Figure (cartoon, helix red, strand yellow):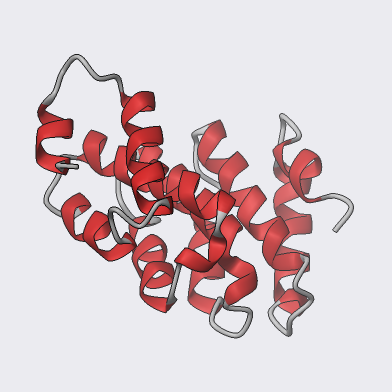
Length: 166
């Protein structure tokens, strides 16, 4: 298992890299922190693939994430690359239930991305926000009106499909 060799291999497509790396994480051959450290040294397309592999792993085993993972993906919500934004939001949707009291800053950035011009970024943000709404924390008092406002502005139903009913 060599991340540098895998990401240098042009014959292996991104989706194959996602499942390989995701399974390495799930099998314990690669730690989440090693993956995130590697992703920080990569160009945006490879970084997005690393975050997608993290999404793959946390969809199956959310408990792989600790607070530093939440902080990492919250930070990557601010990146320019749309794919990084949406994969990060999907990770947050997978792991939010582990950190119900630590989501305020994450919610703020998800709400910004929920107004993004890219449909997939909006969809992934809506997914994460819906997962946070399900937690019924104190944050929901400010989150629900914000989602209602975004839903009213949405032209293609992204929020209605992903968050309603809460």
